[in-house]
Length: 358
Figure 1 (cartoon, helix red, strand yellow):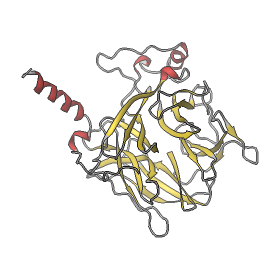
Figure 2 (cartoon, rainbow, N blue to C red):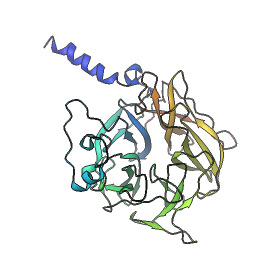
Figure 3 (tube, rainbow, N blue to C red):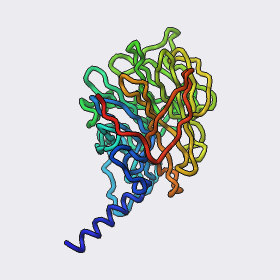
Figure 4 (cartoon, rainbow, N blue to C red):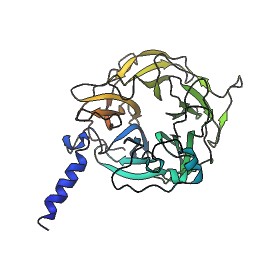
């Protein structure tokens, strides 16, 4: 036993040191950044049942097998989808994990809340989840298969569960959006509940952003008054990673711009009187600090209930890696000025103060 303990300790430290997590010591009062270990990107933060939740993309390289990794068992549909990919049985972005916390400091991992085994049409590239609660159910929207044209199967799906930790299963048995509309690749979806109770789905890649009205059971969409289903609300410099909040009667559209593997990856925003816009770009609110981390972007925002306190969750690339896929999840405070404009966010290694929900 005396020889096993040092080896065990070394193994754990080696695993943690694959990211910047081991470098940041969590205190009893602050979260530290990153907030949990592992390569995770595109974090969506929500509050359910007096608990903070984060749903990220698993951000490891995909297409090449890990050492001693066993191939996955694929359905015929998934095999057909993957026939043009590299080593399809070993693709690793095929599931979603979630994390929960009561205080923003201590986080619990909930592995495989969604897996391709429960979505027969999805095979790989399970990206950028967005979640909402409605009528006692939890609906998880996700992108799958990274489709490049209308002939490929994939797009944006929706899964459902009775609990925020899942397991989630396919809600409609097919993609909710499986085509390019207004030039927008069907990825990076965000489900938004307006103050009047209407749910919208915003999404888009390839520099185009759409909005659509979800129907009551999230099986499809309600056309707008002019008969169209997908409206373009693309602001200047939009790339991907759309997110929206409402504050004091104003709608803040936020998105990521720049290259997702590059140092210019960042978040900008616009303000309007309606979720439909029009949205005119105001400026950047989140970007890298070369002394702390690179490529800060693809974020989400939560508001502490009953307050005007806001938190921004985002991913960034630590300084000790050059691998583009290697990204970590961080949280910092987000503030508004007296005119309702968002102040630039200072990214930190310390993170945020411990805060329990009432």
